Length: 456
Image (cartoon, rainbow, N blue to C red; front, side):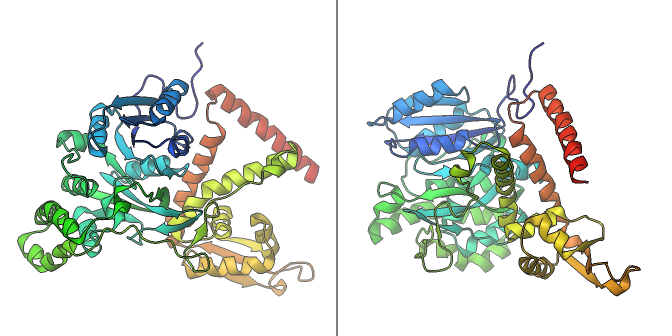
């Protein structure tokens, strides 16, 4: 009997996502970019690499990846610009959703999965996420809309009006699109201009959407290179001329989204687009808040611990993987890892815990536990009542207890954590057949029973 892939099976079905990467003379960064795509936790995608007449080894690198992975498709063409490359890929894409990545940049392992999950869970036409701005070995978290959730087209346009030239709104690479909308309205990049073509495409696309989900997780690593258009610099005169060309798209968009009265009230803000310079944000110096060393933003593993290949390294690796799955929830809700870990451990119903029990659950000291509890209380996620030994029949031996209640405000977080558990399972069982996964579950339960017998 033919074996069936248990997780993310793609045999005989169209890809859920088409990931499009235009490539031009990117031999120094292309491996990093493509590897980040192929290492996605979410597996049901196709990767379209468009070699735009590169004169270095980029074309050969693309072909090498295509030979190694059936999900990679390569288009070789004469040099005609990034917009033409994207349009060619759009015409050949088969995914339900579209995602764009630049060859200089890379994406987090959970990027595609979180974007698709948000799009499906909220039945939205576009998802927009935060990103990291990278300079050398330092990064900064960038975003604009501070509250995660579903927005109408008009609500999103109102936010965009505040910072019309911000990269957050203008670029393609921090967003997920529905291919059907692009096909239905025959949307394409304007290949006749070399500035702000991403923004014009977004404006046209948003004209046809009903709602947009804001995902407060940084999923993309954006690197400004000296060869990128945004870094080339242009005279003030040339910049204004290009903005005037683009402005008609911008004005038309707001005329479409707002009624006449609202547009007239907002007209001066709309015209700010002509004055604002395109902004991708800065990375603060190392000593200032908001700057991290590249690598510090993610859960890291210590390779030397894994070299022992024993029970401790196995436990360590599983813990680190689970922490990596929890990390996007930290970003979404502005929580620290210990705080998310404690919420994950708490019962939805009111339950009694000692401080020692709670500290052991999340692997921290009782002193640090106090700050974790206070932070979750400040967020409105939990409340608790203290019970002293005098409240118990055996007052000499009973420890101090906390009766912790999980409050309604925490329900979205708990729902996210359910998805985290599913995501962790998918990572562990990637490539397993159904029978293999069932056998693993059976053996794991037997191991757990053995351990409990030993510890009882």
